[in-house]
Image (cartoon, rainbow, N blue to C red):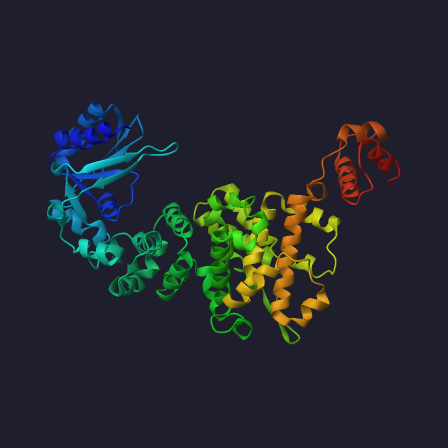
Length: 502
């Protein structure tokens, strides 16, 4: 959209709905010089429908009623996909409407009639981004001290009832703090602690959306700690509460939950610093950037079953099959939050197999055959699993030790004896070197972990005069392993290999 069209939209709004106000996120974001993906307008209830229809006609936009109960109509322009929501005052007037909103910095309004300058950035995918510029401070409607909160970068509830009216707002406070790098006011944290138990009431998909946005930021870990201090984290994930007192003799005060949060912290660091952790392969691993929320959720739930599987054996506390049990428990949590089936499969595969690399690391030599079986069994979850394991392993060392370890992580894998001499640091370093070795095989020697098929099931059936069935798959798998071991190179050698199979 060109410059004149940008001015036209603000003017069309001024001419068509002069009684309306820009409200909520677009005002707050514009004050912070951040773009919004929609325009929210508030106006008297009787004006909403006629205003929406009139605007749609002038802007040649699609229009429909979003919510009859609350009087919400939505327009989306065909050009540049500009989204405009018109909502009836929730209360008798604008003041009542603003004071019913969640946080003071969202309880700001600006009159459409003031004709702010509007900047619109079209997007290839999704709605256009909008910024209101040159807002006149004296014209900003502020009944809740929101301007001061924006300036001080603080999130403060507009009234004591906001979390009773919509408990999701508690989670939204932490998500907003993470996205905007704001602090939550102590009085608001106290309110969240009071009403934390209500977080189970909102629909799972609403919670999922807020968590995904929170986990997409680089500030999720520090906000999880605050959520836990308020009781919100385990009210949201009651399955994590037993971790708090489990294995304190091993993990220290906070038990498994302390470890879980440290793994989350390391995952957040890794996803933001792939160039430091896996410099040579960072670009090839860049696909993970769009999946940050999924990988962080896997980190949060990876040891969910440790308390229910904890058993003392001799003088050791063991967690037999906690990874398999954990995958099942995680699936229940993810279903509750309405995750998609592909996302659930990925997270549960990561959790259910997160001991595989450490099992490989228990051998002095990791064979090509062992690497092949790992990548074959994990499929699309293999690379994400390696990232989870990196976060898990490095959670056992300090930040200073991690900084010291990173330059050595891509060196040839130490022997078990060498690692043992360096105690816990050596064990972690060797495990990380195993991850590097597996990544190297995957990216540099794909024929080892993903051998190209040299014969088909039909070739096997014709050679051995066998009918279709599981046996054919077993023979093809044996051929693939032989390729990895260098015994088979082409169709001719594969057929010869099959003839010699018992």
